[in-house]
Amino acid sequence: MKVLIIDDETNIREMLTVALQTMGHETASVDSGFVAVKKLEEETFEVAFLDLRLGREDGLDVLKKLLLADSRLSVIVFTAFASIDTAVEAMKRGAAD
Image (tube, rainbow, N blue to C red; front, side):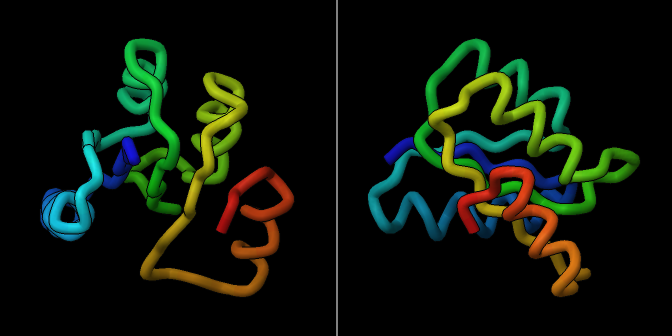
C-alpha cells in the first residue's frame, strides 16, 4: 500500500515511516497540507495519515483539500489533542478514521 504521512513534527513522520515500511508499505512524508496537496498532484496514494494540527494549518481544512485532490484517498486523522467533537467533525468531513 502507498501511504502519505502529513505531520509538521519530524519525529512523528519518521516513526510512522519506519513502522509502515516495516509492515511492507511504501511511504512518503511531508510537513504541511500545502505540500501534501502538491504531492497528490504528482503521485497516487491509497491512504494518508493526517495530523489535526499542522503548525498554522488546520488539519480539518487540509482534509477537505486532500479529498478534493483525490476523492478515492482514505484519510486517517490523528492528533495528540483529540476530542469527541473533532473526531466527529473529521468523520463528517470525509475522514476514514
